[in-house]
Length: 274
Ligand SMILES: [Mg+2]
Image (cartoon, rainbow, N blue to C red; front, side):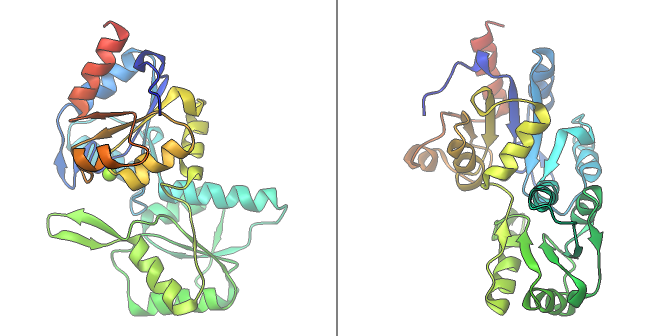
């Protein structure tokens, strides 16, 4: 797509892993970049498909990397999923029913924030919401399958089949959802990136439109593809998954590609004449 001048950008959405840090290793220039956005009156929000952590837990992780953010700066796929599903239910004029959760603290907090009632009884569940679960047991999978087989609406937080770690690529939420789909024959509705709902809810929070919002991400198929579909300007960074050659070969490619956040900051400064 045509890149509007960066000087017209009013808000920036940032993916986290591969943009702000890689696993537990901080990437350079994060605080400088965020400070510049603040100083130039631009809004920003970190949007992550990681549904395992609460916003407060993500803030604590950033603080350990000397990056200052508040919970209001974090929007994860658990929040997006809970917000999207609550919106669907309200739109349909239905009283929210009982939800069987398969996930961790981030998903629990997000569902409770949207006033879902949680149940441990799979046969009482109207909804199954499934996300990252690093402590999963066979019995939890069995109970979740029972709820889906019993007709509960099956919703997943994000499609990522794996995620990168220092031990290589390990099973992600998408792999867990695939297991449940294979078991039940039911395909989940999945809300995280690249689903437009995640970007739309994030922009709603900031009160901005797609044309004036830059999405910064390291992964083409989630961060960039989802944002491009909404007409957002996009910037790929080379500190994570997708390589320069892969960004260049993508259709459509991101509007711009920067080595890292310091390089993107220089582009902003130049565009602003700062
Ligand atoms: Mg990433």
